Image 1 (tube, rainbow, N blue to C red):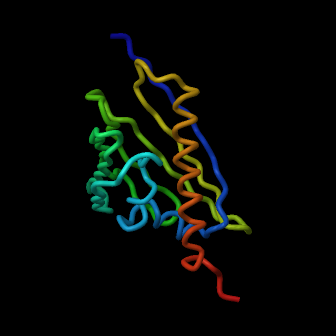
Image 2 (cartoon, rainbow, N blue to C red):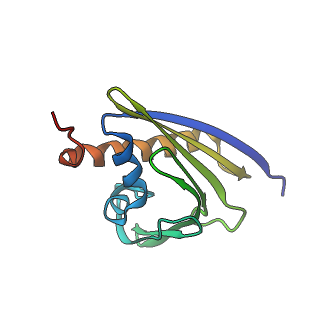
Length: 153
């Protein structure tokens, strides 16, 4: 099967500080509510071992099917960089690599997600849409928890 290496990047700005956005990627309590979950799915389990070499596992039930998203943390540099491998559900091939870079901004922060993957079926437009929806789910979750990041005046 002919497989090609693809890379794509997506950026999104958040009103929350970089430290809070970074935390939402690594804390089971927060990540389990938005990370790799679908609006029509029910979270079954979220396990995160947030250290280099640690693994994460997000399990959701979507339309009666169990989907498991898992990977390993390769770099954790709070609050600016996170690198992890990702084995999406229903694929047995090489893992994707996901780089998260978070830059502080006067209004909050800007997150850039760069995805490197071997892809034999997924269209680039679909991938961009899926990852954009994931970043929007993070924005929704952050908006539900504003007390966590209000700056002291």
